[in-house]
Length: 527
Image 1 (spheres, one colour):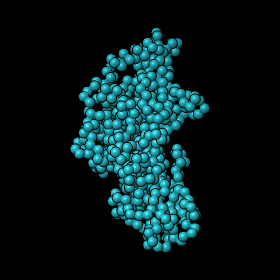
Image 2 (cartoon, rainbow, N blue to C red):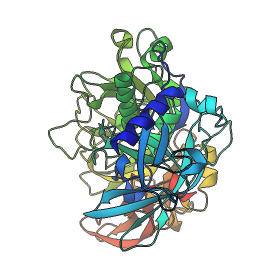
Image 3 (cartoon, helix red, strand yellow):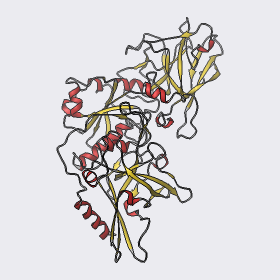
Image 4 (cartoon, rainbow, N blue to C red):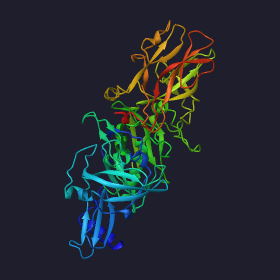
């Protein structure tokens, strides 16, 4: 086995598989989409594949053969050495890997992974390069693989159930917490996204962020960066793409959220005195940096991201904070001192917002996304301390007696981009904001305000009185549970209503209005 491995490595070097290093530079700024999964394989997300488990589909009859596999850059190559056979050595790459298998530990047993089909990968960023010998050697082109997975007690199933259905091969292993673990003896299959939009208005569905980051110019192998820096950027990119604010492998975004990002040098050119709050309609999300221990956390979050953080955006490890809000707000951060740092700056359209319930002393409720967050608030997530009403959307807290009670969860933004809204039209419906002459509010899925006496649509800044969008049904095939949003009626005061996932004290159930999207689910999965 060792002899075969050494022979394979020598062959790899001979054909120029290692890309020559050039000067360090930021890959070009990219418009794309965030994702919620590292590999995009759902059930088999945590599977790391030993290269020495490689098995070929066939072998010459009557000969004893050894097999080995190797990842060099983004190329998966197998070798079969059969003493006395003609030819004695077979190099397997691309289509010649069809039928080969790997076996990896999985849930106390193992899973068998079979390569069923191989084709040339079409990058989500373009341009598309043909898989010629030279393009493969130069690192411009990659093979992608349709893989099936089978445990001992199940039938085979697609490894990549969403996206394009194909996966890239990526070197090294990953922890369950989303940490890249350098180990040349392992690799993973990273499912590729599928563009369901157009070239000018892309909408990437499914897949995992490992494959996206490779397409974006941040692979975990040496290119324009030496390998140690390249691996840092890859880790940085995957945390950013998942909006993994706590560095725990937990996403705080919705699949398909439009994203624009850039490196430090490009970000500095945006504004000499600080980062602009918006770029081409995208709002500042975070500045991501590798710390001295090699961990990735945001240096800060943008103000709008703080204001829109959904229920799930909190750290499991309570000793961690999402980002130091008060001392280093992204909106006023000058990156000049970080010009040579390994960091990325992300801007997003934030298609999710936090739906918050407020209450006053008269037991009247307001449930809304129109909030602002006190600058002194350190942590986000489920906490509501410092979350204040901003019904006129001017960025300033309203003078009101209402205080926040809890975050109901994420809701799709009323400013959902038109192309996303059109694609999701059969899955979602609007929630309308209604008010009466006494200042009582309710949210309902009926533009007639449920026909309730005295209630009428409340328009804010021309938003058609749409608070946001909820799902019209439950997707029983996806992981995670969508929470139903419900309308409630006061038992003691006529004309008082509340919209919440839970019954306020002294209120009775009227009906369900729809379902809140669970972070880590759609919209991408629903298309």
